[in-house]
Structure formats: C-alpha cells, structure tokens
Length: 154
Image 1 (cartoon, one colour):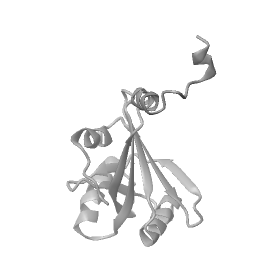
Image 2 (tube, rainbow, N blue to C red; image 1 turned 90 degrees about the horizontal axis):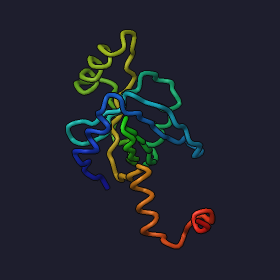
Image 3 (cartoon, rainbow, N blue to C red; image 1 turned 180 degrees about the horizontal axis):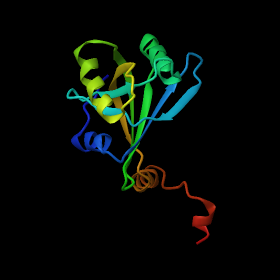
C-alpha cells in the first residue's frame, strides 16, 4: 500500500550531496546493492530512478521486481548524518514517451555521454528512520533490559 512521503524526506532525497543506495534482488533472491545518484522524487511522491545501462544487473532486477511484485529498498544519508530507508515496489518503467523525454533531457545535461535506458517509478510503501541517535533512543525505549555487558559494568 503506497504511502505519502513527508516534505523532510523529499528534501533529503533531493539533496545534491546525499548518498543514495538502491537495493534490489535477482530472481533467486540474491541481493544487489549499488550507489545511485540518479534517484529523485516525482510530483506524485514516487521515487524515480534513472537507469543508464539497459543490460545492468539493477535494471534486470527491477524488471524481475515489477513482474513478480518484489520490493526494493533505497537508503539515503545526508551530509549531516540523517539517514532513512524507503521500501517500495517498482510500478512502471518508461522507455519512451513524454516522461522518458523529460528525464532524458535532464540526464543529458548532467552527463554528456549518457544514454538513458529507462525511467523507473517506485511507489513508496514504508519509511524507516535509520539515523543512529534516533534508532538508539527507540531501541532503548522498546528494549530497556537489553544492554551490553560493558554498559552494565560502568
């Protein structure tokens, strides 16, 4: 079930210096994780991934995901250390038409010799805050008795 991305999450994904990682799996469930600067958000709040290589493992895995309704994950980390994970389902792949042409023009300005193979639309279904300080506070609240022995000894 699709969710709406909050403004702060959209800003994080759109941040120029943010590190963006896309995780997919192949037909056998083997994970494939790659840094992908070409991840953005469209006006409908979906993740947009621009694939530059038609025969890439990521593209192949996304085809598998759209055929078999498999989730993918995107992790984004900002310069200041904020980190989130967004899980979603690829719902559309543009290989021609106005959406493809729009992103083709954008990627051509960024990368001179780029060949856009596909524009993937990933519908977000789940967001998880992964910033260490926030996750640590959640863990301590949810599991107050789980402490490392070295912390007990202090």
